[in-house]
Amino acid sequence: MKKILAIAIPAALIGALTAVLVIKNVPHKSIQKSEPTYARPYVLLDIMHQFQRYADKIYFASQAKNQQLTSWYLWKLEHSALSIAEHKTKPWSPPDVDEAALIKDMFIPAIQDIYQPVKEADWDEVNRRYETLVATCNSCHEILEHGFVNIRIPDQPIYRNQDYAIEE
Ligand code: HEC
Image 1 (cartoon, helix red, strand yellow):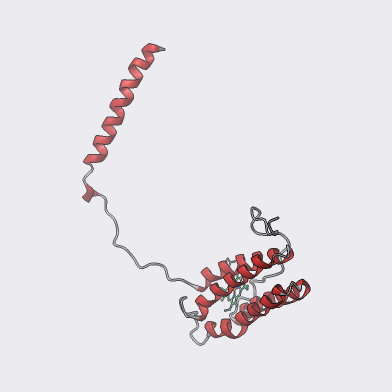
Image 2 (cartoon, rainbow, N blue to C red):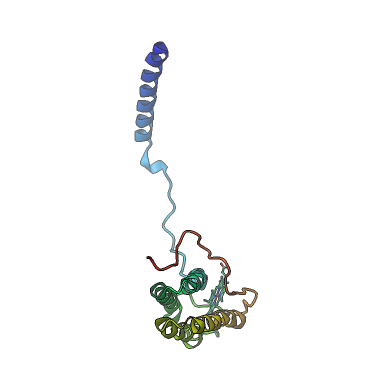
């Protein structure tokens, strides 16, 4: 055993040293990197991923009757929607569609309608208005020819590692 170690350890050291020398001597110019390209534009679909996540979280926070968490996710959803309303996403094509107006006139009011019943802990009303919000998601999908993306009231939270209940 000792004999094997006596050979193996120096061999490993020589190996490591050789590797370091080889890496150091690789001429930097040989690494051909392409020129930086434009960053991918921020598109509507990026926001939809946020919408889907927050719509789910709003629901389970409200089912847990957690006012603070529900309002916070409502605000997160509203904030995501503002990116479209403020033209921070790549313009939706065809150009005659004003997705910013749809968000401002139709979607943001449906979010804002939910804050008050949450504040009053009127959870039946929260549920009704949440249903309207989901209907608004689908109306916009219809208008923008994506009616096949059908959002519904969730029955299982997307994320299983979050506790929506109020901390005791
Ligand atoms: C401004 C109108 C509009 C509103 C409001 C809207 N969507 Fe969308 N959504 C779209 C469009 C357009 C697409 C297709 C985008 C594409 O193809 O790039 C889409 C696509 C999606 C997708 C498909 C992406 C995927 O990964 O499966 C999901 C999910 C989605 N929306 C969720 C929602 C949810 C949830 C809401 C409401 C909380 C909502 N959307 C509200 C316009 C809207």
